Image (cartoon, rainbow over all chains, first blue to last red; front, side, top):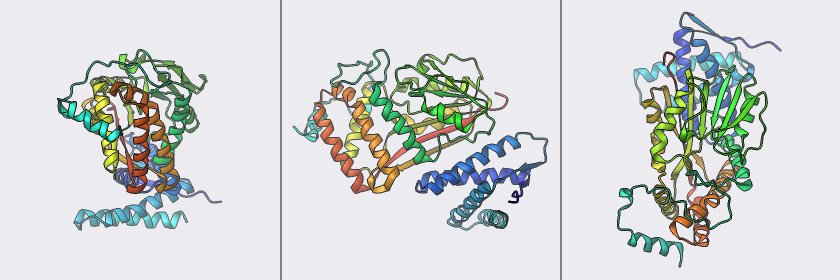
Length: 115
Length: 303
């Protein structure tokens, strides 16, 4: 089985991914029913948040290399899909459009990479 | 006399409005049930085998409800973890499986409930967080405390949080999880019961209304990146497995505290038990959810 590609992020992308993870976790804990699927995604995403935070601590490093397992990639994909629904319900604005576009691109990349 | 008539008569007799009550000195009245309690601590719950069972069940229930044993974004190679109010020790044991590089210390005021012996992965020791933690400053990367609302009087919360932060390393995390008296879709009888329990708790110096301020209390200690969530968890068979588990746990917790509360209020146990039966039915009809309050934050790197 081929090893999935890692995520290679510049610092800005890493910060945005951390924000998306935070938003997803908040939304999932408060408003999604506690199913096995939700809990598995939450655990994997939380673990990735911890890994990414520890990688971002080194301020001198311009890029972050985040290895992902197939499971983690699938969890991020589920997260991105959920975030598209979450942001899609927000009032229309230029910020919302940018965020939805950004998350959409993430979702497409993950969908292609982690089938 | 039914519980509701008793409650109405007690309200008429109370001269001081509910919100103006000042907490009295904890009186530790004679206990009317046969549950074993700590004699020298302001702790509302028992410390016996039945409570041990309930705590372990609650641990599993929380895992199903919030999806994990912890909420902070821990790095995988975290090395030092503290669990305050460790009870049976089940949390450190499960966390040790998730973080094999970590050494976890579990402290509690009593060893009576401990079910595990110390190992290379976890150590248990006695400590009363109300009197300070027996550790140097900046010792732990992650400090965890949950469900101590029945052990920490309102006046002590700030000093307890100060202690938790004191022993946390720069860059480390502090996490709190509590459950109070907030039930969504509560119904009339549930609201009355919770109001009564809140009042009784306040007479003993406990105030569950402090729980929505956990995030602010962490901020006052200088923590950063604070997340605060009110997490509603379904309460009742209506919500399937998770709801049924939480209902069983909450009913068990009510059973655990009834001795303290009924003794203080001079209420027969049977009245309380009858009332709890009714509110449990209400949860099914109204599709109630119990709200868990959680807050966590990070100590600054240069703190």
